[in-house]
Amino acid sequence: MPGQLYVVATPIGNLGDMVPRAVEVLHAVDLIAAEDTRHSGRLLKHLGIDTPLVAYHDHSDERQMGRVLDMLVQGQTVALISDAGTPLISDPGYRLVREARLQDIRVTPIPGACAAIAALSASGLPSDRFSFEGFPPPKTAARVKRFETLAESAQTMIFYESPHRILDTLRDMITTFGPDREAVLAREITKTFETFLTGTLTTILQQVCADSNQQKGEMVVMVKGNVDAVSASEAEQLRILKTLLDDLPVKQAAALAARITGGRKNALYQLALSLRPD
Ligand code: SAM
Image (tube, rainbow, N blue to C red; front, side, top):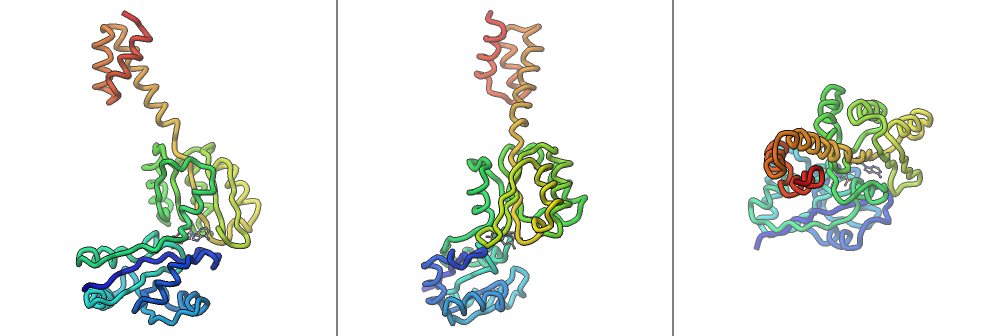
């Protein structure tokens, strides 16, 4: 019987967020693979858990990953944890989970805290569609380039950022997403100084500049999608349709507009009819 790998979320600040099932699993497994054994050692001590602990990183040497996989293949159980939150979300674990799955080992998530989801859930930004963008590149040129690829995205974007880069990142966001783009900066979630700054990128930058406390701790930046991008493309469809209607009958103009813009033929036909009923 192959073993089982548990991917266990741990709190992102408030230890009360440790879910009971995670505690049970960490007690019961044969081994805990942790991003940082000293850091996780403190959590485990607090929980009274004395399961053997080893360090695991995606850049751990092959032998280290091999040892964990061997244990799983031999039928033992392993829990993967990171310093805080959900493993693999801007944290180690991807290589281990991937290899385990390739070797037909059962992988089970034990869900819990994740800063990105906690931040989004309380942000007031649209949450029906969103993208998790992780940490932006640390160097300005690469960061601006990354933001440029996202400038037209219509969904809410979630970024992690470190305190010493937050000012540069907000400035680069203003340059690429525009000064008036709605955003939220969530800081120290679940901790004593939890703060949500809401407004535009400009007003958030002003607040962060004015209060150095806002430049401390752990933070998530969320940027509302470019909803205008959708209407801009609709406006473009309308412009092309109107031009074609100057010379073509409604049906042909709608069909051609659909081919040029990638828009829906029927919707463009209805629009053309409303513009020029034949
Ligand atoms: N795996 C973690 C998760 O599930 O959220 C994220 C790990 S990543 C290395 C650490 C980053 O997550 C921090 O730099 C910060 O951007 C964000 N983060 C973690 N805890 C946070 C908190 N309590 N409040 C705000 N952001 C947090």
